[in-house]
Length: 475
Ligand SMILES: [Zn+2]
Image (tube, rainbow, N blue to C red; front, side):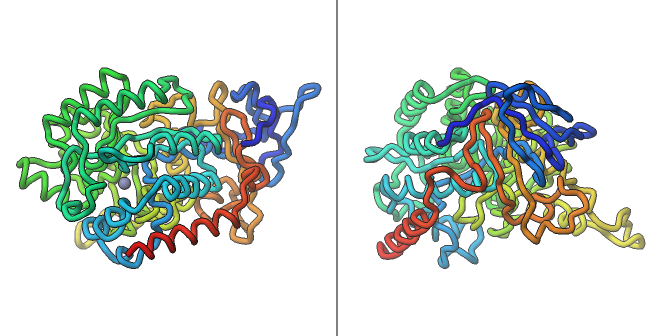
């Protein structure tokens, strides 16, 4: 990680997206002053005597992205032919569950590094990883590796500590290395992680979250209630998967005679300190309940699209009061796990979903298409301040005075951005990978001129190819 002065003036910006809502979604000024890692002024500013300057001519500034759902270990499981055309349940068996027993500390560390670098190169500096590589007697510490790799790259990291106290059928015939933990061991490790890593500050670099892999399958209702009480006693948040496909609805109905969101309510798993990945399949009562309780969503449009799961009803959720954030999900079900492609997909898919619901007038229709389902400003807000909100990191996620200087400067010099009437829209509407002039975390430069200092990308690519060969040869 490169250190630069944490006090400087970014000048000559073409446009600024703030991550805020309404008329505050953009800032008209062309400069941002950073003092001691914090944004202290925005506008048309002139340099102070001796002030360091960053020439951002041709650049647009965004709040750096906050990714609220990932499985970094999957970064070396992209495009697995065995799972590429499978829906969620057969895909889980074909790819992540089949391969995860083959991971050792070196493969795990490499996957984490690739995933974090891919995210950073899209302008993301806060990553919540839902890690479920844990089993009794495990010879390496995945939690420590995740925090070490994030620290080495200089990004904020939220460990959502996954795992299971019971298994689902998918794991039945897999090696003993995949057997579940006991509840005591799970909570003991949570205590260790909280003590070692958890910082409750609104601008924390490290957080821990209690996050069994899937509430309906990973633990009993009684255990889920115990986990929720434990988390609230320790002041940590709760996270998991929910209602990704009809499979969740069927299981909840069959086993618990209720909907998945009602099941979560019975287990004390709803509230402002809880967010769920996916929430694709919801009935109106579930949407209202999520909204009433302020439970958040990590919307993962690319994974939901790739697995054919569906499209989460974000406008309905937001109107009900649900905090919206964006997650890339693991790269085994999303072969481009970066925040530019993810937000681009969110923008398109919400519009497509609403348009799909349009009917002609003669059949009772009231609108032609769905282009008003999500603006670019909405999508930027979901991917930045929305993420900060579900993670409880109030000190980040927006470009405004007093906030941490977590800033992405994109220079739109690829032909795909040529001809844009409004450059502020470029990263989301044209997607691709804009040249990252600079990426800051609390004013510290972590990407400069599209390069992570000290990183040899060709070498990383060679290591990734060797790792995929190693995984394939284990068959
Ligand atoms: Zn997931």
